[in-house]
Amino acid sequence: MSSVQSPIPPLPSPPPRPLKLYFYRMQPADISDVLAIENDVYPFPWTRGNFLDSINSGYETWILRDGAGILNGYFLLMPSVDDAHLLNITVHRDLQGQGIGLLLLNKAKAIMLERKLPALILEVRPSNARAEKIYGRYGFARIGIRKGYYPAPNNQREDAIVMKLDL
Image (tube, rainbow, N blue to C red; front, side, top):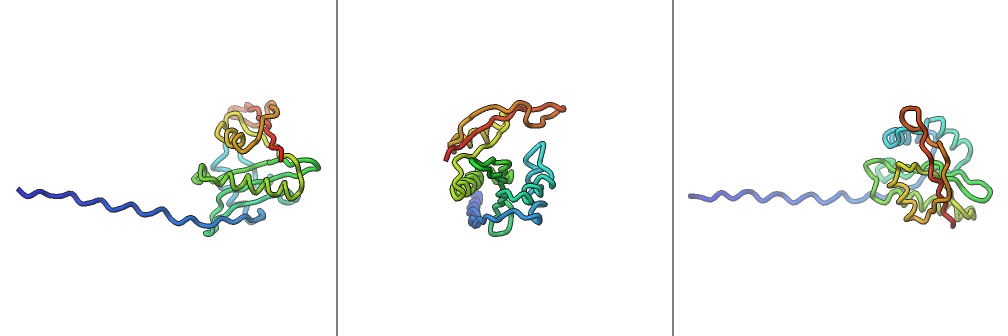
């Protein structure tokens, strides 16, 4: 009897070499890419008009692209006299959990420090426990609740947890 050996399975391919990441100011030409992520990630996404208004208002609107030009994430920051409001921060669904959100938060924090703003405020849905946990690990603290802040299914509203990061 001849014994037949099963072939040795091939080694898995090494992971692709990570591409460098680059921050750019969000421009109107970026909004189609931004909306593709926004519409995929959120059940109640921002509109093209929301993004255009933020750009035209002079807010800190930033995107993060890799070396191949793929949009990884973005954020919009509204500075005021004594703090800033993180209006939107989003990571491409397929890239979540890989540190992209941390890079976005770090960039927002750098802008705050450059502008000498002492605090960053944001809202997060109670149903988004993952995001709330990330913000808490980053140093944000709960400071309040905004009742009925977010749209929710079936014409309902969802509260927002208000969080603050002192710099």
